[in-house]
Image (cartoon, rainbow, N blue to C red; front, side, top):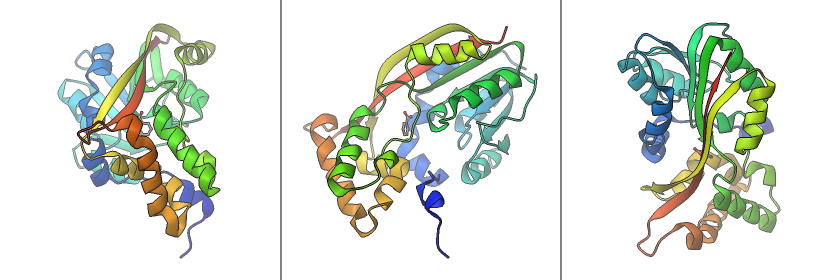
Length: 255
Ligand code: BEZ
């Protein structure tokens, strides 16, 4: 069976591969969980819950929590943890006046229709409810994206496949929230270098497989070229790789 062009460009997720190469994502969520300041019994929506590791921690802390994600594999992994996890596009949330908090960690940069996300979160909250999120901010993975663009130019590839993410600045995201009825309580934009214990090639293939797949039989060579372009910037003299993450963390309230 042939795969459509759109299908080939889509990011897909394997819960097992994510666990191997990206477990640091839920491990590093302490700061945004602190901003959430959960009170036991609160009804919470975990927007982009992934495999549910963090959702389960919030449930154990007393949240009455629903997780949503657009990946079938992630939802299966979250349900296997006993969670109420629902297959849903975060850009088309189907909730109304139901939650005390909408929470999201490391997911919103995948949802490029940010206005629909913000409108859906606002609709999902009860009056007085809060939206607490952390995701990639302006400048996130800039070296990684630039290296892929350079490889794309060299090989005549499709550059739009290099960085299909939404990484807003605090000014841009605050304006979006306020234009859609939120009051921004606090917003932070800060570097978070992340040591990649399994190296950069695993990260690139987990998060940007469609970019490399476009080169078909040359995919391995394109990957090796990207790794070599990144080595001077992101690999130290002992061979340790660090990803150039930048975070945007926000708390906003629905009046
Ligand atoms: C992030 O968490 O910042 C991120 C993860 C994968 C791809 C791009 C960004």
